Structures are given as structure tokens and as C-alpha cells.
Image 1 (tube, one colour):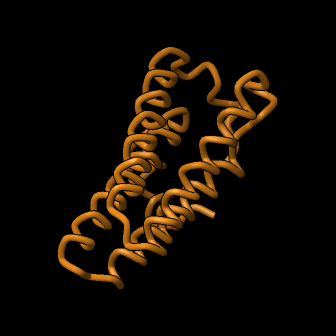
Image 2 (spheres, one colour):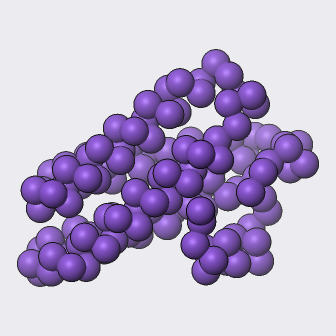
Length: 130
């Protein structure tokens, strides 16, 4: 489930159709935090940031409405799984390269969801579930 702070921020500042992009931005911030922690040798901060990023991806995956985009649903779920695997491996092996790969994928997802929100506007607003 989305942590309360992010839920509050999302509901106060962004329309619901922008939630996925907003969450991806949060994931990118956590990845950046983890990369900085790797540089500093701060294992605890790295671990906590990556676990939180994985939780967000899990929330996005569970919240994805396959019925709204059935043609792309398998690819979206596969990308979520790939990014979660990269984050887990980056955490397990203290691997900045895997983390950069995850960062690239998360950036692509944020960009895709931002463009999608721009295209659909509020037309899906009533069909989004939280």
C-alpha cells in the first residue's frame, strides 16, 4: 500500500490521473538516494531506500488496471518485475551499475506515464482506483 505521506501529497497536489508518474518520480528520488548512499558506503540508507522503491513498484503493479490497457498489461507487469529484480540485486550486491539500469527503466516509466496523463487528461479520472 502507498505510504500515507505520499498518498497525502498526491491527493493534495496532483489529479488522480497523474498518480503513476508521481509515484515514479518518488522511486527515482529513492534510487538517487541509494546511489549517493553507495558512494558514501552507507549500507543502511541504501537498503532502506531500495526497499521503499520496491514497495512503490509493488503498489503500482497491484494498482495497474489490466482491463483499461489489456494489450500492454503483460509488458507493464514484466517491466515492474524487471525493475524490482534490478533493485533487489543492486541492494544485495551493493551494485551501482544495476541501480543505474533500474534508474533508466524508472525514468522511462515516469516519462511514459507523464505523457499518458497529458494525452488522456481527466477522461480516466472516474475509473482510477486507489
